[in-house]
Length: 275
Image 1 (cartoon, one colour):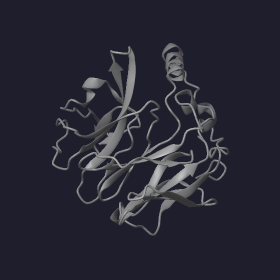
Image 2 (cartoon, helix red, strand yellow):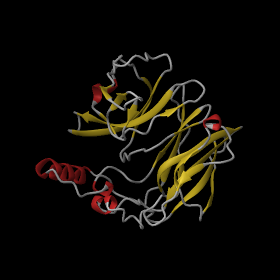
Image 3 (tube, helix red, strand yellow):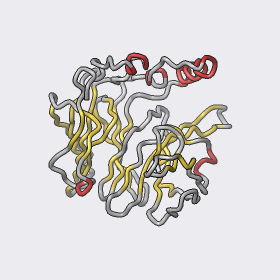
């Protein structure tokens, strides 16, 4: 299976990469409205259960508008494996929010789902205008800033969600930052440690044509760096340290240490348009 940072989960065969179609779900999660902007699924390397979250635009009939929520769910390892089989998603929790921003990746510890909500909420007018132009002309020259608005006066929220019950620790507030990818997270007694590749601002403001041409020297925007956040669930304290000159992205750790303390992480770096 593969999930885009969108709304569809697709099945394909690894031998020839042939797309088999959308995965059918047999549950009630979509009854409130479509799920959009899924986070990349994160698979527990021990149990095989995979977790993700998405934004749902619930119709608010009472106030004649939309009531956005994060929907956090998993697919259990006992789910059918046959192509085309219907799957039932396990709802973990719903989180109401006035300022929903896409979550690109999440982290797992042995107890928690770690979800980062950055101050980059959806821009409804920009979304409609960008999609309208694409539908009418077949051309799209925009970027993610058409769909979202950077609001650095708001903090970044780091949420710890119990993987089983869905209960939340009070969100930790960090200085505003943008991110695509989490490196890893792990617990030691009352402290949850989270490593993230952070940017001071969204590095996605260049036009799509510029990106296609390889002219992405300014891709890092405010500058990406690895930051380590330590969150004490007993005291509510958050601390942050980092490596300011350690700029890379698409990070990975050895799957054997996913969710536990790691020593090394690996990634790629852009060198004047070359990886």
